[in-house]
Every structure is written in structure tokens, then in C-alpha cells.
Image (cartoon, rainbow, N blue to C red; front, side, top):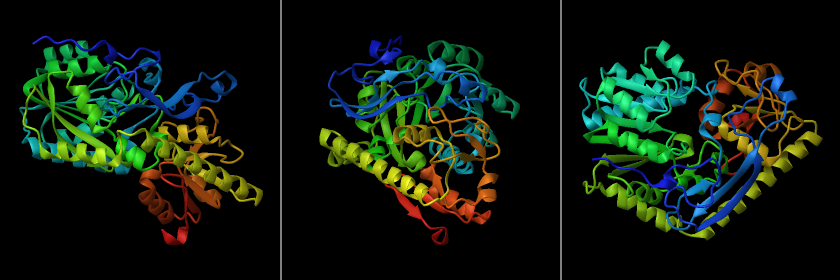
Length: 426
């Protein structure tokens, strides 16, 4: 069955005036985060002396499908450049989480050595490692040079952007896939139709596509405006995802929620229309309606909460600075670029961001505000008064680890609402 995809599912670079999911013009501006550089555009010493390119970063809500998007698309090749500085395998919590995913999926679908699993946006192969250990055939698809790291560690990885052509090449070499999975990437690509049709063509007739992304309900409930950055073209509600797949020969048959990224949604999508749908789908749609994801007022209240969090955070930094207190940042996830640049925090208020020794961002600078990223050993050498946890969605394990290693500082959790946690309370 040869299918094409709707024109609006190829998101053109530049300003976007209609919904990326349903093509509606009923869009409402929720939050203007200013002009920002892409959060992955970390700077070297040499680049600090050159101009920076910035793009509009605005959060927009669609009245028809209830999805959220940004209204400016930066070209995918600029975002996912070869030396993209992110590795999933260096975050212990993420490694553990991805092992759980592989185990649960193997059990759920009774996978065996005859099945091929394809992970799109596979990064360093951390997720596929769990499948490989159980004897299942695996293939990663990753556009950046992180693919080389995966291949060196024994995870067979195809370095390319995924779409119809890539899917054809994979099928010719490896055959059809029983399951295609993508985690934290399905909200990213501008070639949305290419991706879905590539997955459709590569899957067996009874194949399953699994996507896991940030979940709009959790973003709004948790005041998580920092999930809005140029990589995240869309933030999905379940209603928006159903609207999306209704435009293809697919059925969302089941949905689950999880705690990753501060709240995620995982959908199970079967090839073909009219498949049996698990009650979890109707249950979550009902919850979305009750929560108010279909009402503009819900999003206006969210925007007010974000502005208040900003005032509290900046007020605390300014007052602490006057008192001579030292405050530094810990971790440099993509989301911290949105937060610090929107808040207006510079190196006077937060002199550096501490990262793990294995981070690819070490000795680089945050775009926009140019905070240096340093080895987190410096936290223990400096013992600052406060440490801002910018990967706040992992706050508890990070605080426990840092305290165990000898950190005496108090902690600041910037979101969902500004909070100070005393070291003695960890």
C-alpha cells in the first residue's frame, strides 16, 4: 500500500503560521521566551569572539488538537550537527530507566532472536544495549557522530536522518522490523511525515511503533516551560497524537505515562486502522479534558506561574549576591539554556555550571549567557553556599549523590516552583 503524507507534516524552516499536527490556524501565543540560540549550540573559547545566531522561541497552543508547538523551525541539520554534544549513556538514572524500557517491551511483545528492533535517534546505543543483551537483533539510526561511539561499543548503528529513503535502505539490508522505537525524538523532527511513512514502510504488517516524549499535561501541571526549546518543535497531548496518526494508516492502541523528563507519554501505535484499543487511551483522553488541555485559560494560568517563578528566582539571586553569598549551577541539560536565558541569569549571578567528568559539554560555554561548563569536582573544592539544580527533574538522586561525595552546600530547585532545600534535609 503506497501512502503519501500531508504537506503540513514537512515543517518548513522559518516561521510557522499553522498547527504542525492538524494544520489549524487557531493558534494562541502562550509564552514568548525571547530570541535564543539553539540550546545545543554550545560555544568554544574561539566562538565567544564571534556573533551568535538567535531565533524566536515562542510557545503556541492549538485550539483544535490541543497540541503545543514553537512557531519557528530551525533547520534540523543546524540542530543535529555532527558534533552534537549529548550522550544518554553518561546519566546513570537514564541508563537504568532505558534498561527497564527494554525489559518491559521484550516481555510485553514476547520478542525473540527472530525480531529486529530499530531505535530511531539511538544516540550512543544505551537503549538498544538492553535488547541486545537478550539476544534480539538491534539497529540504531542516529544522524550525529555519536553513532560512531555506538558502533565502537558494539551497537550496530546507521548514521543518517530517518525517513522513507533510510527506511528503504535498512529494509534492503536487514529486512522488516517487528518494532520501531524512538525516545525523546518524535517531538523534534521537522520531517514528521517522512518519519511516520518511513516507520510504516519498515514495519512488518503486525509491527508496533513506540514513541516516548515529554507529555503536555505534565509540562503544564509542573510549570515546565524549560522543555520549550528549538529541538522541541512540538509538545504532544494524547488528543494531538491521535489527531496526528488519524491522518495515516495507524492506530494508537495503548498509552502509558512515566516520570522521565519530569513526566512523559509513551504511545503504542499499530500498523493499520481499526485495531483494538486498550481502555488506557479513553481514560487519559478523559483526564486531559478534565484537566483543561482544551481551554485557553489553563495555558494563561501556566504562563502566569512561569512569570512568578522567574521573579522569585531572580529576587533570590539578587538578594543573595548583595549578601556576598556564592551560588553556582549544577548540570547543563538542554532545558537549562531556555531557563537561564529567559530568566536573564548571567555569569555575575551564576559563575559556572558543573557537569560530570564524562560530559561532552565540559570546557564549553552555554549559548546566550556564556556560563562556562566545568568539571563538577569544582563544587567540592569551592563548597558554594547554594547549588542550583538545573536538571531539577532528577533533583533527589543528584542531591543525594553530591552530599554523599561531601558537598555541604544547600540546594535550589528552580521548578516546578522555586524551592530551597537545606543540605541537612537531604
